[in-house]
Length: 329
Image (tube, rainbow, N blue to C red; front, side, top):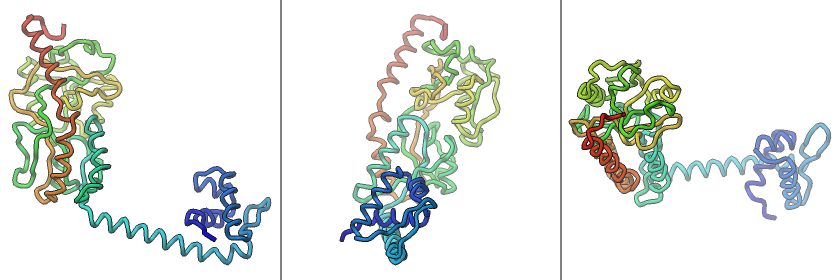
């Protein structure tokens, strides 16, 4: 006789539920399939384990004798699996990484979570939900080990604690507009054409350098007093508001090249006077080998480092200026 552990799990589910239909619902399987599985178990054991009647399914005398032994077997197997998993996690370094909700970083982080645990030394990736724009604060308070942030001239708010490496330059700014916006079809957007519409910016304390740079670029373009919407804590909330037709937002190319659902993104007719980068940021006490494994993985992801689209946008902008045509018309 050779009974598999999965069969004893089915046996316990039917015994505990007292009904094939309830057990099937609990297990997420079809009742006929469960009935056939129980019948195969009984044939393997060599004796009926259940009595079936209109009121439900009850254990036979043989089934009742096997019940506690089966339960002990399943409990012991679960404990063994849990111990093995815990041992594997102790053997591997675990990195808590701030999750992002825009492509291609979503795909790159998912790929890292799949592949890094299989390398030597193994690195497990736990993706932690942190609002976009709040990653540096989350690294500082150790909610996460590694996050992502836009920096101006590579400045960090706590350089004695934070470490970083540039993932990609962000020399272009984009306007995030509702999908049906009148400017959705232009090549380059003049921010003066949006001056009267509410502008969504993050809270200044989340990233003062980026906040101030956005206002500086607007002022350089002739928008000295933009109509500001209430500041947001989450970029996703701002994008949802824009998608619903309420105002617009400024974003870097990492989001601008892949418009979120319900929006369109168009390059803005200004270039930052200072260097802006999307950077990988981590706490100085984070395991150096684990950081190296993740940063190397991300820095070799073609979708994150390709500059071909950036060159195309720059070329269109230069052509428009040479022609002397007003931007956005």
